[in-house]
Amino acid sequence: MAKYVVMAEAGERDLLDKLQEKCGLDLRDAQVLYTGVGAINVIRSLQHLDRDAEVYNIGYAGSANFDIGSWIEVTEVRLNHPNVTYEEPKLALAVCSQSLVKRAVCYSNCDFVLASDYKDCVFDMELAYIAALGFKHLHSFKYVSDNLSLHAYHEHTHGVE
Image (cartoon, rainbow, N blue to C red):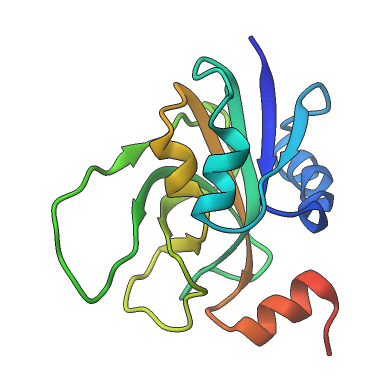
């Protein structure tokens, strides 16, 4: 079975080593794919992959209350649309049976989330679209880069002062 690590940007590559140190998950044999940020980039980049492939989405995420620098294994993903309510599926993800990190829901957005009443979850901009493509073996690990602050995200991920 083909194995892929899917990341939004090449700047997230160092997260592979951090993840292996934290949980012992060795993905050196996986092909790394960079999608670009957001839904359209994800769909264009991944639409031709075999749905039976083993896919690991690894990337940065924000959280209202998880500590910066913590790892979260995502168990379920949903879209974040705080201004409207409508019925949509909650997409379950595969989880590693021996994970050593917290598990939580991820909410995907079209824009960077700067405020939310949602706690004990993470926010990203790609995972719901990856999951919607129907991969049967989809895992996701998110590294908390900020507490819903775009400036803190840039400081943490790009060394901005």
